[in-house]
Image 1 (cartoon, rainbow, N blue to C red):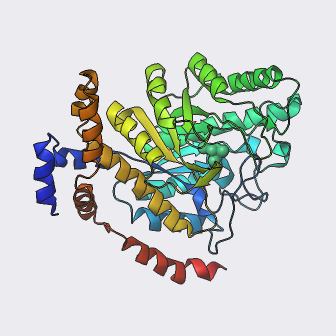
Image 2 (cartoon, rainbow, N blue to C red):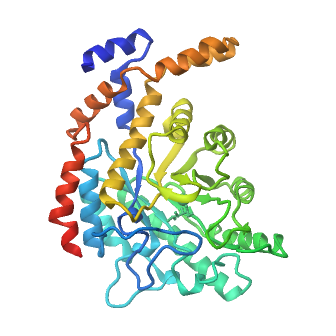
Image 3 (cartoon, rainbow, N blue to C red):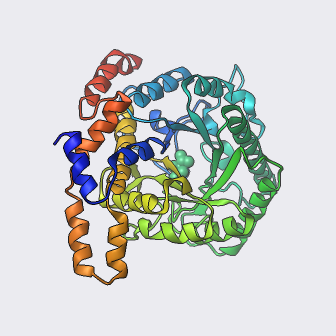
Length: 412
Ligand code: RNT
Ligand code: ZN
């Protein structure tokens, strides 16, 4: 179906596709740098570890900041719209000597800022509370040893400063997300103590003066980690309570709940009590496996909630790391899938469906929910891509395959 035909079909159910195209263009998604090198970073200690696991050994991962930047640029050129890049503290650009986490400063991130300015990307940030000798036992901000806690508090503070620098330089607020793996493999004897220590450490970090116009802290919860199956300090309840009390944002990672929980259902409750809802869009398979996001029911559900409550109320970041497939393809596919689900949700007559719900017209609601799924979304997507001058269909994969042959495989 042509765009013009699709446009008139949507117009009949009250949807203005021209407005939808404009609205979709306004949604910036934060693309996670860590898919590019399996959460490696540029320090000496490598690998995700500490509660997470990357699996696979696909050739061609980025080894240097230059390679990672080039791969991100290549991916971004195949994604319609303007987006952001999400960095982790372990991706600092160091000289001869590695600056330890407690001493990181804007200096190590200047090359990223220079690059982002040139490209027009916004930057988001994450302190790295893992892949470090002082996190070997997966206890950082809740560590019983006050010296280790102090080290990580310092890291948390430095990251707030780096985020502020990003926001100020790039003139767009930087979301700085705190996720700590802290937890225990087996049943702890004290569940309260670590949570009290964690809260105290976080207090020390967030009492630092920072400019709220530039740095927007978020706190990410988790149900369990690999090797930390019995207890996670920063559980959902801990995060909700802490974030509300301290006036920061809570971050929902789609892989951090029981596999049968409906993450989409949580969003409206978050929206009620927080000014914005922050997201790590991920796809768990049996566990928090961080598979590339697909156009599945979980993503559809999240996108619908985001659209119904207004995308400007959300901070959307992707978080997955598959080391078993082409990493550039993993980025492009995930970003486009997120956009496609947002577009599908925008092309749904949400007000009509809500009216059916409120009127108790459940049969009609069910029928319409299903019928609208088959409206000609692809024609609008193709138009969106055409205007953004990027391939609409699977042709994008040809360019990635060529890049793999010409660039990625030469790294091995
Ligand atoms: C881990 C969390 C966390 C990380 C990134 C790399 O379970 O989801 O967000 O994936 O910080
Ligand atoms: Zn996450």
